[in-house]
Length: 573
Image (tube, rainbow, N blue to C red; front, top):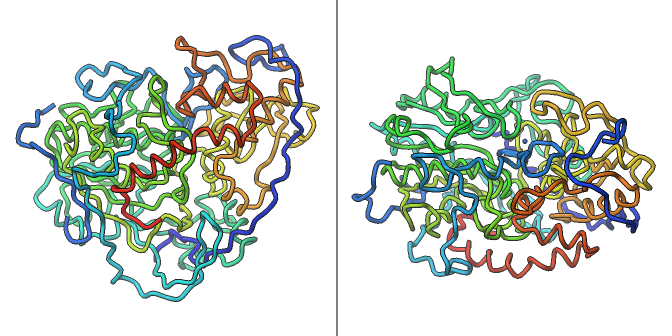
């Protein structure tokens, strides 16, 4: 029983007028810079598979997702797999030997900005719709809100299509890149009725469902998850010799950017190697020698500053150079119904941005992996990785999908995942984004907003698992609770800049000490610049430009990117 509960009885997105969050107040810039002081002391190949073969393989040599970490120190503090890593901590592609950092890698090829011609012929999936009985349902286009009638079967994840990938693993030593999200088919059993958790038909119920914490049923009882991909492969006799874990660890409980130790999985006896062990982000030569084929099965949320794709990139890069095969079991992207945000610019490559793509790229990991390979972004060049993508079935980009488990510690429900592209911009500013509470990325506030008009919601961050020493720990923060906004409105808003613009001006009016955006690094960049992939968003906010003006500044680049990515898409838009 599949638990991806794809909001299969989809709801119609209704147009809702957006209430003004706060009056924009003009005043002097916040004095000072650096850490915002506490008020008290002025202070996260078989049929149906898509294969992309590497060129010249005979000559290959051997050698936070996650979300952002809360803090107020500026860009030294990472955002989360969730948004990431220290900009100087990640090695450049090709630097696997010494792990030396290079904030400007990888660069896109000079003529790759609008390369619609796909010389490498990255193959497109032909979706096999023979599995599952189709039923007539009313669907909703998540982008336009238009209702459309169509016959549709339940979506199937790539890891459910064992007949497509098990033949590729026969006689091979296999590595697995995954974490707690690698539940085969995202199966979730209701612990009371042993029945599948379903989506709801009306918008009000869906909004309520979006606030149900992952891991719980509507009545608050814990859910029972299905089989993990590691356990499934071992059970079916696959020779799994090593597993790799991304930011937050294999079980997804570690803080954003935290060093995670390697260990041996008790259930299977498989060694788990952390790619966040404090050294190079690449697997070591010894770890590469352990396997022939890498299987990737991990849930992403479709944002450039969500770091799981960065770990995938380094694994693909290492596999390309070592002549290893990569089999990616694709999953739907919960933010796959739109593309938004500025393209990553030269000078802003970091641990929360490694590819020249928008903040919200709208691609599944399988599609993004094909683009990485086909655009020549790997160190070994165009189509250097022997990549096979096992696509989802019955999925398209305008399908609204719901996850079943936290993809990282501070994305605790679907509402947070939809708000994340907008609220993550508060990371490492003078405003808490709710880390250290039960509702990170759904609330925001600061002690400095006490008494500010429209910032009446209060919360107090506390130390907890996945959020140790959060910003403004133990202090009352005054801000906003975005859970009150209808989910349909959140889906329509995409990256909603007014949250941070209004708060910036309101905090100026409060006369808060320190800089709202934190202290810049040696390059003159603040953390929001690395999240956005450019300093132009911050500079335009400081100039008093409107959200509409700022958003318009990247629309041409977004359209160019859509054309560039088109040859690599596996699913209808």
